[in-house]
Length: 469
Ligand code: AMP
Ligand code: SF4
Image (cartoon, rainbow, N blue to C red):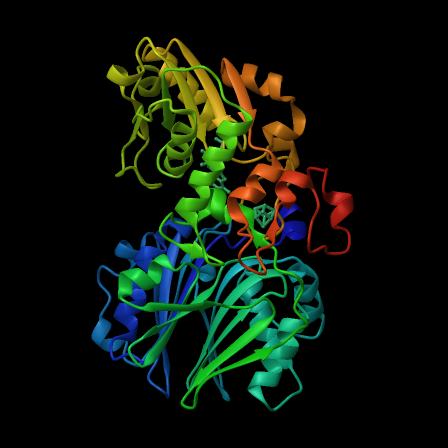
C-alpha cells in the first residue's frame, strides 16, 4: 500500500548526449560519474537516426557494461540511466532507460524523480485498455505520450507531461530527436552542457567534467528542451512555479564536485558546517566527519571553531551493496566492513562527530559506539541539516514517518538512543544561508522533509502523511 501512495521512487541519475561519434561510450563514462545516485541497475539506449538499441542490466555500471559491444551500439545520440530501486522493485524490467517499440517508431525514457499520481494514471490507462509491463511510473509517461491525440510528437510529450504531478527530470530519445524536461518546480537537478558541436544533459554537472563537456546552464522548471537536426529549442510546457530544488541534494545526495543552480555542493556543505558551528559549538579536542558526505561540513565546522579537523573515521571504499557482509557472530567479534575509527586520533579525546543527516539513527548509533570503543572520552554529534521528520514524496528514499527517529523522539531522547554526550542539528535558517546565494535569482529550495511544508501536493497526501500503510 505504501508503494501505491508514494509511487515507485526513482532516486536515480540520467544522462543524454546528442551529436558525438562515440555517444554510447560517452554515456557509459557519464554514468560512472553518476554511479553514487544508483547502484542497482544501469543502461544505455542509442540512436543511429533510424533504430534505437539498448544495453542494460542489474548492478553497477562496470558490471553491466563489462561485456558490452560498444561497436554494436552505434549512433551519434544516446541516453543513459543509473537506478536506485526501492520498494522491492529492483527487477530487470524496471531497469532504465525503458525502451518502447511500435509501428510508428521507438521511444526510450530515462527518469529521475517520483510521479505522485503515477498509480492513479496507471489505473486510468489500464481502464482504457493499456497493458503495462513494468511497475515503474516511467512507463506511464510513455503510454500517455502514445495515447495523446496529437499527430505532433512534441505536442504529445507536452500534453503527457502536463498530466503528471510530482518531481521529475526526464531524458527522452526518439530516432531523430532528444527531449529533456524538468518538472514545474525544478525539484530534481538537471543540467545541459556542450561537447564539441554536440549537447549533453545530466543529473549532475560532475558528469560533464568526466566526459570533457562544458556546463551551459540548468534546465528551467517546467522547461522542455528539444534537440534535433536543427539544433536546440526550448519550450515552456507548463507555467513555471518558483524553483524548489531538493535541499537533500546539497546535504547528502549529490557529489561535492557538482554545481546545482550555480551553487557548488562542497561549498554549500562547508557552509552548513560553518553555520552549525555558529549555532551549536561545544568544547572539544578534534572535529571529525563521517565519510564521504560529511567531510565538507566537518571542515567548515572546524574552520569556524578553530578546533582541528582530523580524519577520525575511515571508509573502506570497496564494500559495495553486493559484498558478502559478515555474519552476526563475526560482527559481534568486531568485524566492521564499512567504517573504522582511527584510534590514534580519537583515543582520550573529546570528539565532535559531524554527520550530514540522521534518518533512522542507525549510522550515528554505530559510529558513536565505535568511537567510544576506540577510546574517545566524549562524542558530541552535530548534524549539518535540520531534523528529518517527514517523508519525501519526490523520489528520495527516506522511509516512512514511523521510521524517522526525529519524528518520534526529542533531541535529548535521540542523543540518548545514539549514545552521544550531546546532539544538535542545523536550523532551517542555517541551511538556507548555506545554500541560497543572495547574488543569484531563483534559488528556492524544498525543505519538506524538515518542515512538512510540501511544495507539490497530490490529493490524499495529507491524510496518509502520518500513517504507516
Ligand atoms: P540512518 O543510519 O538511517 O540514520 O541514516 C543516516 C545516514 O544515511 C547518514 O549518514 C546519511 O549520510 C545517509 N543518508 C541520508 N539520507 C539518505 C538517503 N535518502 N538514502 C540513503 N542514505 C541516506
Ligand atoms: Fe528533497 Fe526533502 Fe524535498 Fe524530498 S522532501 S525533495 S528529500 S528536500
